[in-house]
Image (cartoon, rainbow, N blue to C red):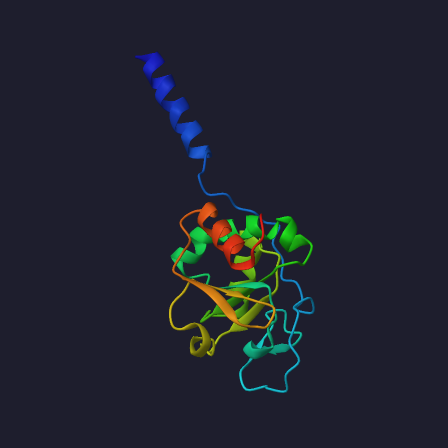
Length: 180
């Protein structure tokens, strides 16, 4: 009986210390100065950079670029975010060949978004859409991911959460003709 009690207690202690959720605290909010832009005088739909250092018009964004629209309150966004963190570590993104841009939507506060970015390990630029302005371009609902070419044109879209890293990586490779 004593051996069974020790086994049960040991099992409980070991299982209570393990977690399937990986928390990466190395995230930060970079400036948006690294985002490549098209020359345009159009300033019709400005959305501020999450770091507070400027605003950008959707029509100015120049690819190749993956744009992921997310919210810290969105369960699908939380599930797919580790895939984007891994994607951003790939050579094509580290070198700037392809850019990654996040657009945080309908957040309760800027601080909620910043805390989520830090907790999730994100380190790419983000725009902040507290008023839902991006719905006119990306449609309602999150997550949604757009693939924008060098001319600023959408070449592919994913509505809903990615269910695997492979699914995301294959769509990036197809959209931009690269190998990750």
